[in-house]
Every structure is written in C-alpha cells, then in structure tokens.
Image 1 (cartoon, rainbow over the protein chains, first blue to last red):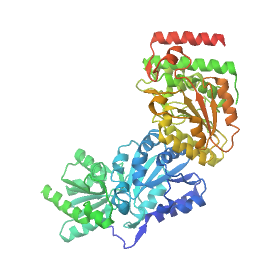
Image 2 (image 1 turned 135 degrees about the vertical axis):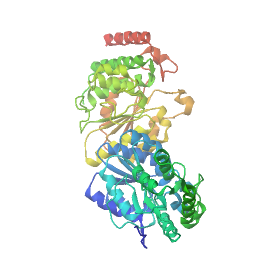
Image 3 (image 1 turned 30 degrees about the horizontal axis):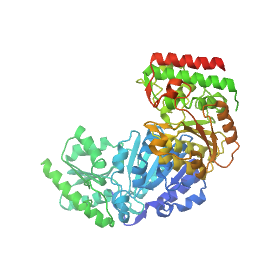
Image 4 (image 1 turned 90 degrees about the vertical axis):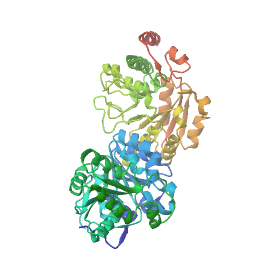
Length: 316
Length: 278
C-alpha cells in the first residue's frame, strides 16, 4: 500500500537535473523554453548547453512549430512553458505541425490548475487536458510525484510521438517506493473493495488521504493513479469498477474533458456504475494559495470522501 | 546548382499544365496561388535543390516547406514531372484516399518534407529544420515559400525573429507577393506596407525580384542569397496571381476557382504557344 512521504520535492529541480544529464548523454535532446528560465529553474541550462537548450523568447507558437521542424531532422525536443501557454497558446501548432505532421515533441506544461496559485485565473490551466485529449496521436500525462516525473521525462525521450506532460513546478510529495512504471498503465496504489478512487496529478495525494479516513469508517477504497490520462488504462479502470461497483474521479482540472470525462467514457461503454467526478465545476481560476483554492474549487480530501459515500449509497 | 534559362522556362510551363490538369480532374481548386509559384518551383526543382526523386528521404537533401500549403497542386506537378511519383497520380487530387491532398502533407506524398495548411506554421517548421541543420553542421538549405496574405499571421514574424536571432543563413525564404488573398487584394484587406523593409527590420537579408515569374531573375536572387553567411534571406517575388494563363491572371479572384475541360484545353493551347516561342 502506497504511503505519502513527509518531504516535498520541487519538480522544477528534478526537471533541471534530469535534463542536464539527459542532454549530456544525448546531444539530440533539445530543451526549448519561452522566457521562463528564472521561474522554471532551468536558466543555467541555456549557458551550459548552448544551442541545445534555447530560450526562444516569448513565442510559444513558434517554439512548438520550430520544435516539430527540428524533430523531423532527428532532434528530440522538450518544450516548456506554463500550462496555459503550453496548451491554449500553441494548440494549433501542437495539432498541425505536431500531431498531424507526425512530429516528435514533448510539451511540458507547468503549474497545472490550482498549482498556479498566485498567478491566478489567467495562468491557471483547467482545460489543457481537454484540449490535448482531443488531438489524435497525443499522449496526455498528469503527474505530481518525483520518481514518476523522472521516469516519464526519460521514457518519453526514448519514444517517438507527441506528448503533453502537466506537472507542478514546486513541492510535491513522493508516494512511490519502487519504479517499474509504464506509460498507459495506471498504478493501483491501494487495494479496496467498496469504492474506486481514480485520481491524477496533485489529487492522488488527496485520494490517498481520503482512503485513510474512509478506512476508519469501515470503507475500503481502491486508489488508482491514472497518470496517463490518454491513452487511458481502460482495463485497469474496468477491473476495479467491476470489483467495487462505484467510482469517484479526482482531478485538478475542469470536470469537462479531463480525467473524469475519460473515466466516464470508459465506464459508460463497459461497466456502467454509480460515478461522481471531483474537480473544478466549469469555472475560471483565480488567485490564492493551494489550500484556499483546493477548498474553493472542491478538490480537498473532504470532497472525495463525500463523493465516495454518495456513490456507495447509490449502488445499494 | 545549375540553371538553364530555356529549360527552366519550359519546365515552368509543364508545371502550369500539370497543375491545371490536376485541378481540372476535380473540377476546381487553388488555381491562382499555384500558378503564381510555378516559376520559383521550376527553378528550385530544375537544378537548385539537392533532391533525389528515387530517394525522396535522402538524408542530406535540401528541404522545401510550402507554408502556403494550399499551393499543393503546383508542388505535386513539379514533383511528378521530376519523377517522384507517376503523372497519373495528379488525376487523383483531392479524391478520397489520394496521396495528393489539397494541402501539402509529408506523410502522404513522396517529396513533401513538412506538413502545412494552417497559415504561418510552415515558417516555424522551416526555421526549426534549418536550426537543426545548423546545430549538426550540415550544409544543406531549407527553402520556405510564404504567401503575402499569409504575412497577416503573427507566427510568421515570431519565426522570422527566431531565424534571424539564430543566424540561420541557410534558410532562404520566398514571399509570393502576388498582391491578392482570398477575399481581395492585400491592400484592401490589411495593407502589408513595404514587405522587404519589414523583413529587413526583422533581421533578414532581403532581395526584391521585380518579376517573380521570371526564372532567370529568381535564380540570380538565389545565387545572391547563398553569399549571405549571417542572416536568413527573404526573397520578395513580385508575382501575378494566376500567372502564365491569361484567363486566371486577368480574373479578379482566382484564389479557388473552377477549371473545366474547355478551360484546360484553352490553357494548354496558350502554354504550348508560349513554349514554341521560347
């Protein structure tokens, strides 16, 4: 059973460290950014990897297109901006120059959803997964765990294709002890028979906390980290839903178009059962700290617990 | 690089005939902007670009990015005439299952290097390809064809700033300045001002070609562009939309129009007459 570790790790530090060693190992790995090195912790890479790490300036559309052009020449680009600009601002380029063109680009969108905190509604991507989930050939990843993040950075560099990876820059709890991850395969973090909680990104920690509390009330929740939101692990979700008969999803995203939608689509077609989506209810973001926003948008463990009890009630 | 004036002019005529044949097979298509770039394509595929029809994926080939992707029929005509695929394929333009879609697609057509169709995007793709070549120390060229109407797109200017900043001197940009876009003239819709001055102020070496439908002038501009070692070069081709075929050159709006069997025969007669007079 997965346990949440006490210490937090800044994912931007993991990113800078992993990119540094990956770029040393393979000169074809390219890192591009749209003038956020100071905020993303990657500034030193531009000096140490001249040409291989590039601050293109504040031009996300050109960054996405140029990266696609580089990829057909054998380069392996990672491009990075805040999640809003890495999705909305370059969606057409990611679609056409990227997916439709058969390119090979990893798009990193940092500070998804409420993790944008003080940057507020303009910088709070609650629709990025919905946008990219609808693009053929695009893999969508929602991650807020250090070892999983490390794995995905290295794994996507080995694969050819289009990837969107959303992650918070700042402190994230570890909850994995071992590796052995696979893109497209969800991880069952905790087994249970009464209700399934399928979560992604920062909501996985909330789901684990919710499961702890539910256990004290005699409810056994199965917690699944669905870090690959597309292609979704239908097999894992269906197997769990068949066992528990009730499903809650939890995501740091609009309930329209993200993880909740993806799970609902799978269940509606294969294992219809009581289900409830915990997530942002189709509204814009705003400024505040994580605790405030988590409460404001209904993303805390309390909302997951309440949703779990509701779906259990509905199956009886 | 090689260039033969008469041969290239003949090649341009064959491109015009073949692109009209392709469009006529469907009944209509992007006639005007295809005809206006027939001459630059004749120069590029006639002996400037390092390409191999028998090996379209040749590693050290020059790239051509048609950012005005709707001019696909002109490129398909040039590629078929050079032997990248059989001429008969031209008659499948835009039909279900074709290898020749309206907008150029690298996954469908041998000889197409990058996929375009959303205006402005080819500029970044070309800059990225040229940047990768520069990082790897390759000496091949990336050619980019932009429409003048396409210059309305902000992404074009992002990519030009990027290319200039990265000193991509092996990126040669052609602007097909035919003065017309879908709904009217570029002056009426959103005036572009001095195109060459714009590219110069964005950091490009610029060359204006007064008659962008004259292969010899185009070739001379390319020779001059290759002398530049610091900046990308923008060659502004002052062209005529529908160039080479009176009916379309004189038409107010030939962006997308019909080509009947009779139209095709008439165009062939005009083009054959021109060829004989060379």
